[in-house]
Image (tube, rainbow, N blue to C red; front, top):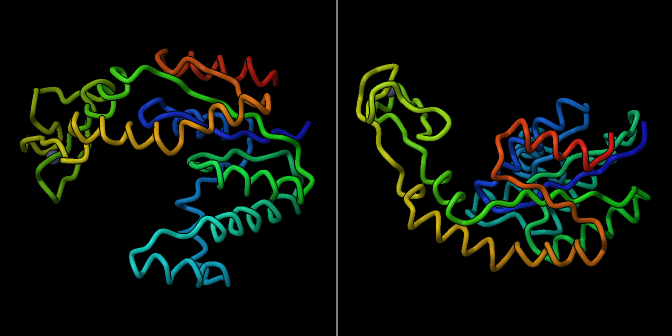
Length: 221
Ligand SMILES: [Zn+2]
């Protein structure tokens, strides 16, 4: 099998995480998400993990350089096996991160990545993002989604019948704010990857199965 390196890209709510996981399990490529990468390194108390721990414990963001080192370390481990490629999800989020990743991949002599841009208009993104509801009973903690996982009785938990509520971060206002941040910091990557002819656009307004089909078609695997 040829080496396939994929970066999933797109605004919050477009469904890129779901698709990244699906592609990863269907074509058996390791799915690297930087959040778990950092948590695992801290747990293992590796040299990089110890450094990361200092930032996390002091409430700071782990700096780009360290994240890139962690990705490099992870890729070398994968490369030692039978390397077929990898899937990155949630990274890069900024142009400097993308430049650093590009250098890393060049140093490691990896194939250029395919960047899958999962797109959807703002109204759909905000509707999806603000559809989450949580059970108010802390001991239960069930999570619902008014689009994809509706409770049987409106406003009530299926499991324990307690009232459902919406988290502050999930309100329409908060979601619109998250999107604004995405457009300022991350969206410029679209142009960055388009110029390098690495970008593939996928219509994220369709159902999950259809989006997956589009991705597989585009990857030609
Ligand atoms: Zn409940």
